[in-house]
Image (tube, rainbow, N blue to C red; front, side):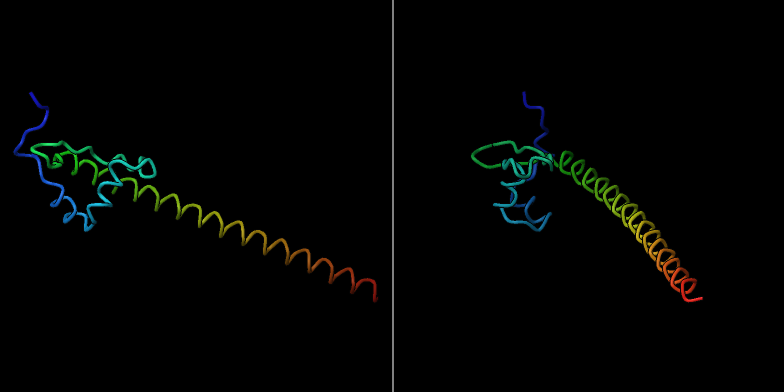
Length: 109
């Protein structure tokens, strides 16, 4: 007995259309170690064709959306931190330059 309900299975061609990808990209997402971090759902082979469970695809899409939001938030935080650091560095350089100017003026007097 299969753990899959055949009514919830879609062929790889429909998966490619859903994500606007080629069959080679689909294969890479599923099989290539380079894309293992994606955790793309595994296919089921029936009658010589690959099928994917719709519920697993939906769960995968939701996970990718959640990761994308988290990644964007982390990037925004790093950007803000970088801006604060750059501003602090700029302010420090300005104070240092003003200090050198004061020393130069004091030496003239």
